[in-house]
Image 1 (tube, rainbow, N blue to C red):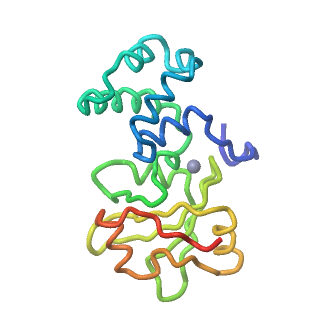
Image 2 (cartoon, rainbow, N blue to C red):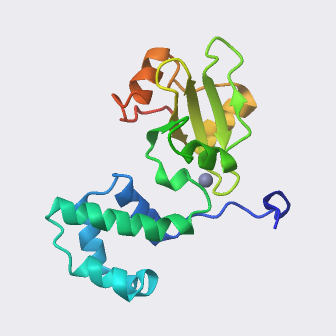
Image 3 (tube, protein in one colour):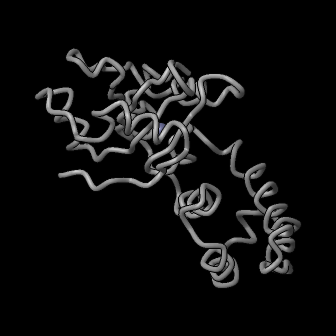
Length: 191
Ligand SMILES: [Zn+2]
Protein backbone atom coordinates (compact mmCIF):
# COMPACT_ATOMS: atom_id res chain seq x y z
CA UNK A 1 0.00 0.00 0.00
CA UNK A 2 1.33 3.41 -0.94
CA UNK A 3 1.36 5.59 2.19
CA UNK A 4 0.70 8.69 0.06
CA UNK A 5 -2.51 7.27 -1.32
CA UNK A 6 -4.18 6.10 1.85
CA UNK A 7 -5.42 9.60 2.68
CA UNK A 8 -5.89 8.50 6.26
CA UNK A 9 -5.60 10.76 9.25
CA UNK A 10 -2.52 10.39 11.46
CA UNK A 11 -2.94 7.59 13.97
CA UNK A 12 -2.12 8.24 17.61
CA UNK A 13 -0.12 5.47 19.26
CA UNK A 14 -2.01 3.20 21.62
CA UNK A 15 -1.87 4.00 25.33
CA UNK A 16 0.40 1.05 26.06
CA UNK A 17 2.84 2.02 23.30
CA UNK A 18 2.85 5.61 24.61
CA UNK A 19 3.55 4.37 28.14
CA UNK A 20 6.16 1.88 26.97
CA UNK A 21 8.13 4.46 25.00
CA UNK A 22 7.83 7.08 27.74
CA UNK A 23 9.61 4.54 29.95
CA UNK A 24 12.12 3.41 27.30
CA UNK A 25 13.20 6.92 26.30
CA UNK A 26 13.55 7.97 29.94
CA UNK A 27 10.51 10.21 30.42
CA UNK A 28 8.84 7.84 32.90
CA UNK A 29 10.44 6.74 36.17
CA UNK A 30 11.20 3.04 36.62
CA UNK A 31 8.99 2.91 39.73
CA UNK A 32 6.03 4.43 37.85
CA UNK A 33 6.38 1.92 35.04
CA UNK A 34 6.68 -0.94 37.52
CA UNK A 35 3.44 0.16 39.23
CA UNK A 36 1.73 0.30 35.85
CA UNK A 37 2.85 -3.27 35.14
CA UNK A 38 1.28 -4.49 38.41
CA UNK A 39 -1.93 -2.51 38.07
CA UNK A 40 -2.87 -3.08 34.42
CA UNK A 41 -4.17 -6.63 34.11
CA UNK A 42 -4.66 -6.22 30.37
CA UNK A 43 -0.91 -6.25 29.82
CA UNK A 44 -0.58 -10.03 29.74
CA UNK A 45 -2.61 -10.06 26.53
CA UNK A 46 -0.47 -7.31 25.02
CA UNK A 47 2.96 -8.61 26.02
CA UNK A 48 2.31 -12.33 25.87
CA UNK A 49 2.78 -14.75 28.78
CA UNK A 50 6.59 -15.00 28.78
CA UNK A 51 7.38 -11.27 28.71
CA UNK A 52 4.56 -10.51 31.15
CA UNK A 53 5.89 -13.08 33.60
CA UNK A 54 9.40 -11.62 33.29
CA UNK A 55 7.99 -8.17 34.08
CA UNK A 56 5.87 -9.06 37.10
CA UNK A 57 8.50 -11.33 38.68
CA UNK A 58 11.47 -8.98 38.17
CA UNK A 59 13.39 -7.17 40.89
CA UNK A 60 12.97 -3.63 39.60
CA UNK A 61 15.40 -2.24 42.18
CA UNK A 62 18.28 -4.01 40.44
CA UNK A 63 19.50 -1.72 37.66
CA UNK A 64 21.06 -4.63 35.73
CA UNK A 65 17.68 -6.37 35.72
CA UNK A 66 16.02 -3.14 34.58
CA UNK A 67 18.59 -2.76 31.78
CA UNK A 68 17.76 -6.27 30.55
CA UNK A 69 14.03 -5.61 30.77
CA UNK A 70 14.52 -2.45 28.71
CA UNK A 71 16.15 -4.53 25.95
CA UNK A 72 13.31 -7.06 26.03
CA UNK A 73 10.69 -4.31 25.96
CA UNK A 74 12.39 -2.44 23.12
CA UNK A 75 12.62 -5.66 21.10
CA UNK A 76 8.88 -6.06 21.69
CA UNK A 77 7.99 -2.42 20.97
CA UNK A 78 10.17 -1.62 17.95
CA UNK A 79 8.40 -3.83 15.36
CA UNK A 80 5.13 -2.13 16.38
CA UNK A 81 6.44 1.29 15.34
CA UNK A 82 4.95 3.08 12.35
CA UNK A 83 7.48 5.90 12.72
CA UNK A 84 10.40 6.91 14.93
CA UNK A 85 8.69 9.92 16.61
CA UNK A 86 7.49 8.22 19.77
CA UNK A 87 11.02 6.97 20.54
CA UNK A 88 12.38 10.52 20.84
CA UNK A 89 12.32 12.78 23.89
CA UNK A 90 10.83 16.27 23.59
CA UNK A 91 14.35 17.53 22.94
CA UNK A 92 16.62 14.87 21.50
CA UNK A 93 19.60 14.17 19.28
CA UNK A 94 19.82 11.87 16.28
CA UNK A 95 23.31 11.24 14.90
CA UNK A 96 23.81 11.50 11.14
CA UNK A 97 25.86 8.30 11.07
CA UNK A 98 26.60 5.33 13.36
CA UNK A 99 23.08 3.95 13.13
CA UNK A 100 20.19 4.08 10.67
CA UNK A 101 18.11 6.08 13.13
CA UNK A 102 18.26 9.30 11.08
CA UNK A 103 17.13 7.37 8.00
CA UNK A 104 14.25 5.87 9.95
CA UNK A 105 13.27 9.26 11.36
CA UNK A 106 13.33 11.07 8.01
CA UNK A 107 11.58 8.19 6.24
CA UNK A 108 8.31 9.62 7.57
CA UNK A 109 9.29 13.14 8.73
CA UNK A 110 9.44 15.58 5.86
CA UNK A 111 9.77 17.31 3.52
CA UNK A 112 12.01 19.68 5.46
CA UNK A 113 10.93 23.33 5.43
CA UNK A 114 14.20 25.24 5.80
CA UNK A 115 14.67 28.61 7.46
CA UNK A 116 15.46 31.01 4.63
CA UNK A 117 17.20 33.62 6.78
CA UNK A 118 20.46 33.62 8.68
CA UNK A 119 19.61 30.46 10.64
CA UNK A 120 20.51 28.17 7.74
CA UNK A 121 20.76 25.16 10.07
CA UNK A 122 17.09 25.34 11.08
CA UNK A 123 14.20 23.37 9.62
CA UNK A 124 10.67 22.32 10.44
CA UNK A 125 8.93 19.13 9.31
CA UNK A 126 5.91 16.98 10.05
CA UNK A 127 5.58 13.23 10.31
CA UNK A 128 3.27 11.77 7.67
CA UNK A 129 2.45 8.76 9.90
CA UNK A 130 1.59 10.22 13.32
CA UNK A 131 1.24 13.92 12.43
CA UNK A 132 3.90 15.08 14.92
CA UNK A 133 5.51 18.46 14.12
CA UNK A 134 9.27 18.79 14.64
CA UNK A 135 11.76 21.61 14.77
CA UNK A 136 15.23 20.52 13.73
CA UNK A 137 18.74 21.89 13.56
CA UNK A 138 21.42 20.28 11.45
CA UNK A 139 24.95 20.35 12.84
CA UNK A 140 27.47 19.13 10.28
CA UNK A 141 30.34 21.10 11.79
CA UNK A 142 30.95 19.59 15.21
CA UNK A 143 28.82 16.58 16.13
CA UNK A 144 27.30 15.47 12.81
CA UNK A 145 23.91 15.28 14.43
CA UNK A 146 20.38 16.57 14.25
CA UNK A 147 19.04 18.38 17.30
CA UNK A 148 15.28 17.92 17.39
CA UNK A 149 12.47 19.55 19.33
CA UNK A 150 8.85 18.32 19.44
CA UNK A 151 6.38 21.08 18.51
CA UNK A 152 2.66 21.48 19.03
CA UNK A 153 0.51 21.58 15.86
CA UNK A 154 0.02 25.35 16.25
CA UNK A 155 3.76 25.94 16.60
CA UNK A 156 4.41 23.83 13.51
CA UNK A 157 1.74 25.54 11.43
CA UNK A 158 2.93 29.01 12.45
CA UNK A 159 6.33 28.25 10.92
CA UNK A 160 5.09 27.00 7.58
CA UNK A 161 2.10 29.33 7.22
CA UNK A 162 3.42 32.58 8.77
CA UNK A 163 7.19 32.16 8.85
CA UNK A 164 7.18 32.60 12.64
CA UNK A 165 9.85 30.40 14.21
CA UNK A 166 10.12 29.49 17.91
CA UNK A 167 13.19 30.57 19.88
CA UNK A 168 14.60 27.05 20.19
CA UNK A 169 17.83 26.46 18.17
CA UNK A 170 17.95 30.08 16.99
CA UNK A 171 21.55 30.31 18.23
CA UNK A 172 24.18 27.86 17.09
CA UNK A 173 25.45 27.67 20.68
CA UNK A 174 22.14 26.15 21.74
CA UNK A 175 22.25 23.71 18.80
CA UNK A 176 25.73 22.57 19.86
CA UNK A 177 24.69 22.25 23.50
CA UNK A 178 21.83 19.92 22.53
CA UNK A 179 23.69 18.07 19.75
CA UNK A 180 26.62 17.47 22.09
CA UNK A 181 24.31 16.07 24.77
CA UNK A 182 24.96 18.90 27.22
CA UNK A 183 21.42 20.27 27.25
CA UNK A 184 18.69 17.72 26.65
CA UNK A 185 16.17 19.73 28.64
CA UNK A 186 13.36 21.45 26.82
CA UNK A 187 13.04 25.18 27.23
CA UNK A 188 9.42 26.36 27.35
CA UNK A 189 8.13 27.66 24.03
CA UNK A 190 5.36 30.23 23.74
CA UNK A 191 2.19 28.68 22.33
ZN1 LIG B 1 5.66 10.07 13.56
